[in-house]
Structures are given as C-alpha cells and as structure tokens.
Length: 228
Image (cartoon, rainbow, N blue to C red; front, side, top):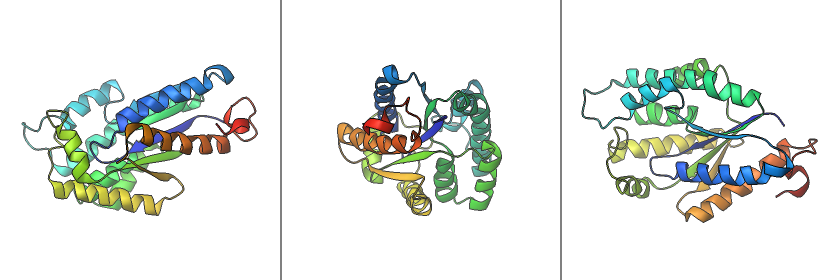
C-alpha cells in the first residue's frame, strides 16, 4: 500500500485532537496482528523541535507585539517545510499511516480566507514548503463556528488565533467550505456536531472504505478482504 498521509482539518474546537487519538488506537488495533504497519500522529505547527519554537510564537497568548499577517504566513510555511522533511516524508517512506493535525488547507483557510492574503501566493508557498506532498485524504471536521468557540473557551486560556473575532472564524469556515467543494475527492466532510463516539464512527467508516481501495491487491492488509 505504501505510506498514507491522512490530515484532519477544521475550525478551532472541532475535536481534531480527540478524534486523531481515537483513530490511531483503532488503526493500531486493526493492524497489530494482520500487518504491523506503523501508525504515527503528528501536528502543525509544532511537529518538530524547530516547529515547537515557531508554535510558541504563532499560538502564544497574544500579549506581545502583534505578528504581521505576512510574517505569520511565512512562519507557518517554515514550520511546514521542516515538518515535511523531518517527519512526514521519512515516515511515509517507511510505509506508515500518518495522522496529521492540520496541513496546507489550514493555511488557505486561516491566512487566505481569514486574513485575506493572496490565495495564489499561499498556494505557491505551500508548494515550496511541501515539495509537492499532498494528503491522501483530508478529514474535515465541520461544526458551526459558534459551537466550536464555546468548546474552545471551555478549555481555559485561549491562544492568539482562538482570540480572533467571530467574523474571522466565520471566514475561516467559509474557506474550508470552499476547499471541500473544490477538492471533493481529497476532502471528506464529517459532521463534528455529533457526539465524540458518533464522529469517530463516521471517520472509521470513511477510513475503512479508503483503506480497502488503497489495499487492493495487497493481501497482507485486513481491509482488502474484510472491508472492516
């Protein structure tokens, strides 16, 4: 089958972290005996040592001097370039299933639609940062912005991005909606307004179908025969 990059996207508070953790456990249980395929979870920003330093700048508490929108864009691109070369490409080369919390679509949605920066410029920077590496599947956890912000505030202190205006987050949501319409084969919408268990059930059904397609002709993998 080869390595697969599965990305999770969505507005703040959509539940990405929880769903990635649960999916990783499920995939590990599926592959533990049939085929020992590594399942790796990572995230952006902050998936590398350099990324952690950039994350502290990008997602701080917002009390320092404002970060210019263009500088923010370039910092995210730098984080991604390091993450791709240090984590994603090596793991995919080993045949791992990589579950990544945010990737290129986040930059389009947040810096493009949210900040209003040039979409062609963002596409160019994403291409440079990734070296052309695209996700094999992107799970979009779709939830109303008002609901997601209530969830976020319930966690305690909000980071710099979470503190943005409701109008900003609505533009970000608009960006994800447009991306899903533009890339229907790569981006699959999941209703994230449901319970954690129901959301996970949706995700597992999507993954079982995709893995069966990817595994076709590779009898060592369980989904090719069982459909799980």
